[in-house]
Length: 229
Length: 139
Image (cartoon, rainbow over all chains, first blue to last red; front, side):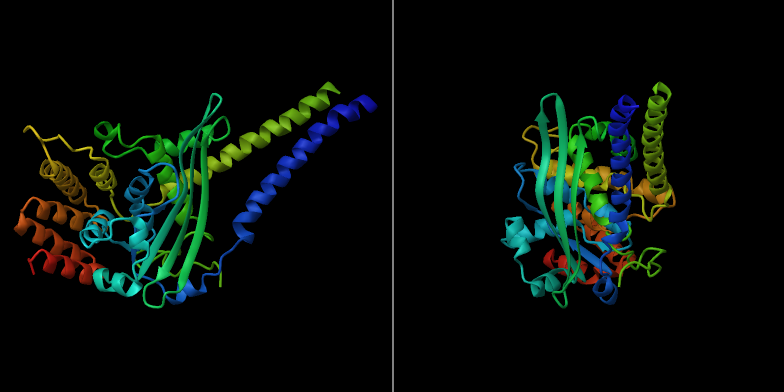
């Protein structure tokens, strides 16, 4: 009997831990509900996505992320300004870095674009890391949506997205087939692993109900959400 | 005892299977949502602009950014045509991006037409497009 207890208890404990983890994980999605009242009251029609501030070691992270940022936001029902055109215009106006662009007064952003809101993204980590035989892709980012008229923050969120090792593989495989690059062969060299994971991280950042952006005016579900204040 | 062990292992396996199934369900639910737009090649073309993927794409020696813009414009043009042929909506920014690529090649009439189309499709872009047109001396 004592042998039975000794061998069973650790397993029972594992099961209990797993259950707890599942409960915690599902609890997080609801208990960390955001206050959406400001967002709702100042619902933007259009969002300007500025080139992300890049704190990661990958010098290409900023534009890699910028290039995948539009779809998830557009599909949420907002007008998304053409990211590369905006970037080009700003560079022509002497704003040569993302930091310069992030420091631009809201009045100037209003004057140049007429955007209702600006999305400031900061990339904290971006890239692949080898640990022994395991290769992990990690994208850690934070985002803040600011109302151009009032300067108030309407929404913010963070994401720490990891893929690799033995843990993420099953889900990662499914997700990667869902986000296959549309141009296929032509871009096989550019739409690499990190690019795909960045797209996924961005989706997880802006789309989840209760944590992501509200549905914008161009979405059929606009105004239907009951989340938050 | 062995049976008990197996039972527990079975529960663990079932739980793992369940979480995979739930995840799969969530994912397929996401995938099944109808899209507002057909995004096509737009984001890849934006990426390629920065990654210089089209540099040297032109046939002539010393292919520069003009050739890159031409290659990108040709691809985006085809992609936009396909979107419209399929009866789908082109997403925000695509026409403006293509218009800008035309502008970079000096194809001003086409640039203006595309930018005006962006503006009429997405009135949220009105101020931005007007600014762009005046900067290009096309307004």
